[in-house]
Length: 439
Ligand SMILES: *Cc1c(COP(=O)(O)O)cnc(C)c1O
Image (cartoon, rainbow, N blue to C red; front, top):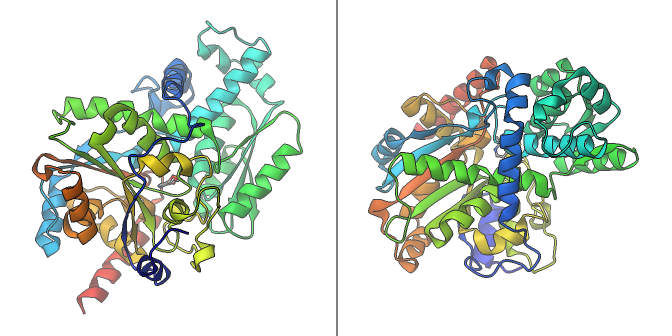
């Protein structure tokens, strides 16, 4: 493993750190996917938008487009500055994937795309539609009855299960979601209400995925959505980059050598933040600086990017327990499809303690009225790490960055489906943490 003893000690002690990726800017691996795949995914989502608007009333307003707002967040910046954290100039925004329709999290992007791609393949192969047909044809009782002979399965800590489960069930697939023991009750209940079979597994997320994979592979006509290695999820997520680019342009934010763009993305297995990074790099190249945010107990992408080539490294291998309140990020081993791509694209990774996640979730509520789940607050400390840490300052200097003209995007990733009483629990926990720290 290529990691300093000092950093390794901090990781083991669950101290928050910023790690700058020494391989950033290098070549992509020879088998890296092509950028064209992002356009294929974006076109597919577009093609299916009338069908989505038909299935889900909350999508009628957007014509079936899966996208979220880009909200200015200078008040969050100013509040954190006041706390004496000294966080930077530049314009701040929150990307509101916590509000993505239907699934309520960033998983809507990749998850919907993969289920739609599978439905399209099955439909074309069996002549339910021909290539040029409108995809709305797939909402008929005939199509549903046909899809009912096929199964879709997924292993998940929760949010991916919601995304895949709701979309697959809407199309008529026989749908199974394998969940780890720590998955939230309300997510299981929501899926069961839509006729999704929920199977609970003892053990962590990787165990749920493995069990789901084994069961699905033993069945004919079953598609397993493999979060640990799925290109279809990845390209669905990547399509977000083009939407963000359009929103930045509309907000008058320039991205070039004089105007750096920083993006802070919560990372679980790496699919969602990895896909978005891949897309943003395709658009903005060296002018975008993407950082992942991981819980101190689950820095799986950091650990994997420090591993020797070809070696799989998990957080357990360095003595961490992968136990965090950020259930969307509680992953011990990074995706082996995504990690090699991130090796040359990711600027770095910072970690956050659960305490910090709760404080930041409260800061989002107090300054912007945004209520999210703990995972979704992981990016909030990004600008602080860049501007106020030694490693961050060195990064700015090495890249000759003009921070006055910087744009910072904190990617918020989930929360709008979380029941009221759960949100209240988060806030209470945050308040207790805050009081505790003041004494
Ligand atoms: C899944 C998830 C992420 C991270 O996505 P990965 O593809 O697992 O890296 C971030 N935030 C929330 C709320 C999530 O559910």
